[in-house]
Image (cartoon, rainbow, N blue to C red; front, side, top):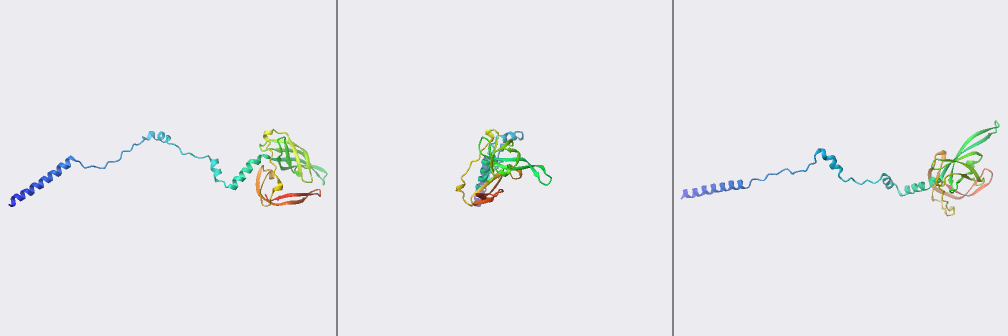
Length: 227
């Protein structure tokens, strides 16, 4: 009885081994493969890169405006709107030297504003007082000979006249001083020390001030500012 059982066990073992061998032959093992990459040849890479869409970049001027505060934007807008209305005034004068009784030539400088397109310029009388020659330089850098056509020594006001193309004249827009309040923001554009169209800012410090003049009179309703 032992031999038949042993033979049956051996037969079963051989059959199982043969079955495993047949399965391995009919189903080969699956091996992991490297992914296939569609590489661009080195010589063609610049052309391939050039076909890629470029990111949109805003202009530097737009970027600069984005970085401005709301207060700075007001400053810039005021200057860009009004600086062309400011002129530079240069004068040549002859002063008498009382010590040696001789005439001494001299020069002066000041600021003015374009009043209209007919060439009228508003300035201070002390800027052109005693001037033998007056030159008005507009925002475009061109100078024009000016003549004095009106003055009020008491209020230190003078009006000049130049002959210039209307396209070069940008009149100022006059405001209403009766509506001013102490503490309001003010802007001053002028030519201190010959530096053309300089902007300074400040506030209205007081209203209705008085100021004595050189001829002993008094100027009233003066606006005091700290710009």
